Length: 572
Image 1 (cartoon, rainbow, N blue to C red):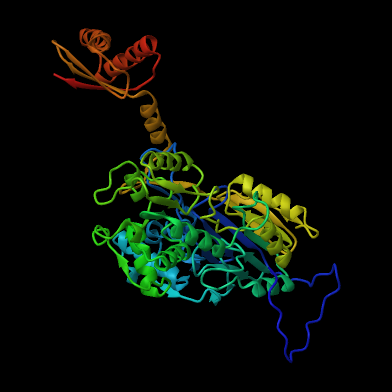
Image 2 (cartoon, rainbow, N blue to C red; image 1 turned 135 degrees about the horizontal axis):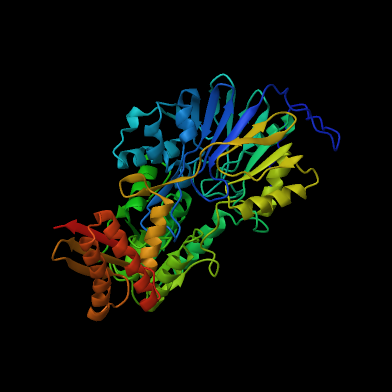
């Protein structure tokens, strides 16, 4: 992972004495660093940097729901702080085009005035597609396409020197943020791939130069801080995919992240090399491929086919790139596994390649799909048994190498759960030149950076907003608890006509196999409360309580269950 040295007429660089480090630039004032997402989690990355009356924002991602969030589609970060200080935001820089870095922007940008956004061509291409998908007009936003190695002047106080870093998507950058306080290096997502598919290696010379100048703070990707060694290169995955596709007898189905343009390219090249026509299925796969083709990030020797066009093509000449790498119920691979796809099916002799690994929380869903594919007679290839996937994030040896280039005074592990952040903290503290201070940040923390110290000075409102259908923020933790309770114990609805001749009906769903006898007993308990309430002329609200609590107590005693009970009362 050392860069190739060149020779010429330039005077050789003077080596500084071992153990000595140049003084960082003179520090003036204080810089506030405010992570609003991406700390203690994988997803919804967004960080604000504030110096006096100016704010720089980096990324604006989303996260996917966990199993205990039924009905939730996605999670987006709360940006109350940015909304309250919107007039101070001078620029917004996007490191790359993954959903966890740009997926929240269609929800976040409409809350704010027009702000200059900077991102590479592919990043902005994907963002435009997302904005249009949500009915927004990209022309209404100030989107500025820049090189992954661009230098940007933002406001009076910020200069952002972008540097290319290899990752699982093209046009990915880290950032050197130059401020009056000093330099901050933000790695973005990265791994140090020596043989990337597009041939564009990480621009480590910029990182080394920043380290030579002096770096006050390093904010670095912690995702694989527990993983020893070096993350395999995409070139190694390409070789494994080529071998698997070449050995397949029947049709080949490949699923990977739709945004993993490098991986999609490797699959297409392997398919073409072995005489297979490539079809794509799945909305996100088609959308990403269309954008990548239009912008020149994806090359196809022949063309991409539709599923209708490959129906009569011999199995040995077919490859389908499909969505569903995370076991999503409505994605193509799940529908194939469970026999619910209208045009395609998987059977004996077919090969299915999962060129991905499950996001934490999706393991069970992916395993269910794999098992169903085996039941259908398919040959299923997936990591780690087969080397058909490699992470896009650096492992421990790469993190050590990067840290040694930067040699920061202070350190903030980022982009990972607490265990990942903590393991990177331990790794940094074991280096020959450990940081003077390492902080494990949480979303909403406000950190003050000066030449002398990095310290937490407060908190702002942070967390997640749940997106459920068209609703943003309509779902709360209380509602999720109710959904979990309904999923666990079901629901009982008691409807009563409150009059001189009261009538009570009971309906249950997802409760128990409630026969007429149990329903009759619940009806009797409720009817007694209604009759008593009418006789004593109680208000409707009190009668409702008199129905609810005895019915709840009775059901718990008889069944041992605690379903959601909804009494609905009408005056007759």
